[in-house]
Image (tube, rainbow, N blue to C red; front, side, top):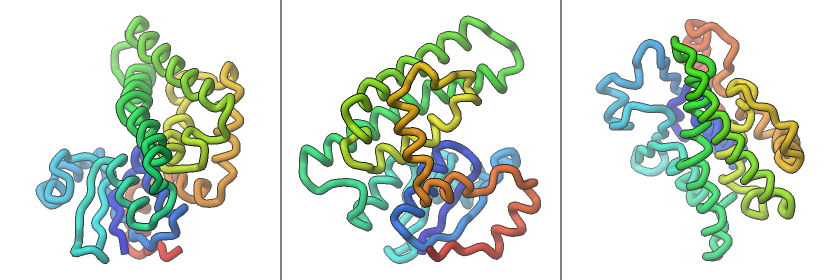
Length: 221
């Protein structure tokens, strides 16, 4: 059993997609960000950085893993799925995963903040992060001109990128100039595990009801 510490963010949805794709049993442990539960001492023992997601592998000496990319690698190695053993194929997956961790996530994350949340509208700052996100989308689009998936075969790299691309409208960005990316996005969005993973936790439910349901919900797929 995996204890899955999560809230509704693109980084946590990477992990929920992976758990579903790998058919691993897991229990949802909601961390309510607006209540600063991620900064509480109990959670900081699991993730010293005070962020979600994090997991505890109850089948492996209660081993804790934090950072979404590290969690994806851990789960892939645990199951032998979505991360090839052959050196070059494995490297290709890890290259695109690191690209997401170091580029797409941080840049689009800033686009989200300044476009949606920041109290002062700063057009030059919004434009800077939106343009960089578009540049990164073009990198994906160019790559996907010749490949069905980022690392040739469907992998944890695709799982890492998909929840961020799914927020393109939240960043004020259109996909219409990226036909290969659109094709990839639509294909991945049709995967049953992705459909489920993108709803965990359910984003539209009030926090109190989400917490109540989570106390009784154990995923056993």
